[in-house]
Length: 306
Image (tube, rainbow, N blue to C red):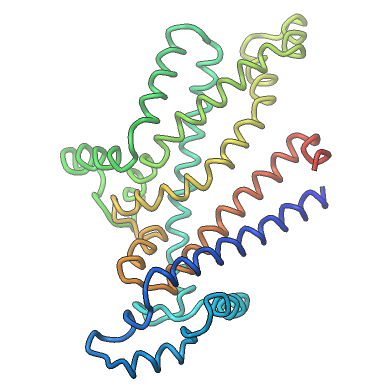
């Protein structure tokens, strides 16, 4: 298990390095930082002096390794918009985004697991068909459209929840519902297929022959042996889950990391944007690493294979 964990840590480090390098190079080619930091009426001499002071005249790879060395010491530069350390600005917004991510994940699982159990138990029946059809429709609906509809219905017309902002439990309901909506369908379909396969396996048929009841077989044998594919699909979709918060935060005015990244793009605040991209990558990499470790715990064959 130790070598399995070390391998995942090495992959984590490589992901952070590659992400930071790509983000840094792309941002450097996106525009001239000197034109952002100085007013329009600044003279060419002022621009040249600023570029020299910030090392912008160096080769882009030289700039990157200087940036990476500072980043390893916790220095991601000063935000050009907030005039504060960029990493502080980013980390202030991170908890709000994680609230949405894990809230949406928990709600999706709470809804998806019973639906998958019901669908698998009645596979081929009318209930199964309704659940599968509803899932296909849910996956085809964009989350920004669904979030807007929720605002119109539950905020504008019914007045049950705030339209935007944060601060109370009511502010969380609609954003979390929007994030969970798509993943309920994804998790339900994956778990249903896995449950049906498990229920036709030899050990489940043997348990049924020994007199185990339908519900007991479904929960004790079927669900227990169907968790690996669900854990795997959660890991695969974790990046999409986190990335989806960018749109959701924009729709609901949620003060999270995704909204901060959008604001940094509009302000061309490179230090904040670089720090935000790296933190996004770190959270996704940690989520995938935890998924891999959990997968290895659930199935020892994965550890032996690696």
